[in-house]
Length: 521
Ligand SMILES: Cc1cc2nc3c(=O)[nH]c(=O)nc-3n(C[C@H](O)[C@H](O)[C@H](O)COP(=O)(O)OP(=O)(O)OC[C@H]3O[C@@H](n4cnc5c(N)ncnc54)[C@H](O)[C@@H]3O)c2cc1C
Ligand code: SF4
Image (cartoon, rainbow, N blue to C red; front, top):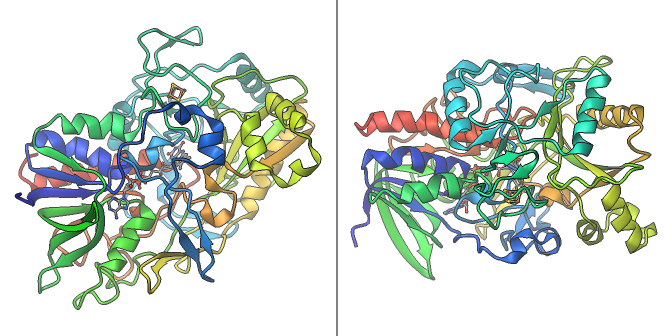
């Protein structure tokens, strides 16, 4: 077998999958190495018990906290990566997020590139991932060079009522931009639509491939090109370099119990922020004693994952909404009327059902009999609150002597998040929507906070200075000539919007650079 390629991409999620799609038409020989397989298509894809309670699709893996305590991370290993289960809320960073932002808990640092450098790629990524939305409604949004190709997903009556109520209070709710293969009329999916507008949108895999995930949108179409290959069940253990330490010469893989080696002119790591850092650290050698590409000692540091919470408001009236995740609100993104610092973003969540609540058995459920949990789920309106956490060099990924992943986290910048929850509560009270706001913990693997790894980012940051960053502006390692990292690792800060659109846009941006380097631009 000829194991030499022009490009090897390790990982097929938002970063790796999107890059593969962009490079595929070049005709270059491209190999995708993915540790997972295809996510099985089965009825359990849409069963809350299987997905949320039994965590059927979560990786069976143990990571450790700084004290050596084991935990099960909220992470999935499949073709398409974590986008197989994501909520597909695909938002741009705000223009200001690329500059320095002063938070109550400290400074969110400036990126080395601006919103305008990313803008054309945001538009391309929105088009590629079938984002349904409407620019110009959310006042915090930056300029867009082109409209979304698809109209916003329509609100069901209860969410439209909420939208109207928020407007009445003087707020600016907006249709949440969603990556979804939905064609609808009068709130119903058309017969030609892949998505059937069911209740299983957020955190579930899609049984009918109606979600715009990296497998459906990018990896499968890339594989239609005969120059692109995919190897599943291929876990990359380490990267080896030549004697100079400047060139990755071997990608060492375990597959079906044996070790295989691959090589390429260009090697792209896209394993997700935690695993990409872990792979570089595991690949330490004589020329790179602190880990590959780690002369700065920055690899693994500045781990971020958002400060987030899920809440359910128990409304007096039942909430029969099926597809609930259609509304967002950024009015407290930068400040509030009574505070000068950023609070964060409010979004709807997928609809809670009784199974989720029973499985979650949250602290407050001990005094609720089961039928009450069903009743509560029927009356709930569910929200996702997301605020910026700050890049702290001590929040980091390391490897223990057994080669296992260790995460060290100290929560940062929590005050804004608490205030965001208080704002939501006040708004809901004002519109008479609830008498109780209860916190949810199961979504995104947050049953213990450290396991909430869904929005992991920042561990292999990019920048101009090789002393303070691992990657240059093209996401090539400063220390090597042919190593790139193209996933959430490159983030300098995480803003308060969901990360995937920025990961996808960046993959397209780096893809343009790689096409030029390969002589295929
Ligand atoms: C429940 C849930 C809901 C979410 N909702 C949203 C949302 O609404 N909007 C949003 O923007 N984001 C959302 N996210 C986050 C989003 O899924 C991630 O930000 C995104 O997938 C990260 O992209 P990535 O390329 O960095 O990594 P991933 O998508 O995780 O891809 C990494 C890939 O690398 C593979 N891999 C890892 N290690 C190795 C190795 N050693 N060898 C070979 N392959 C390897 C993995 O199997 C995986 O396929 C959600 C995540 C979860 C879990
Ligand atoms: S809402 Fe659409 S995309 Fe989501 S799981 Fe149902 S059919 Fe799939």
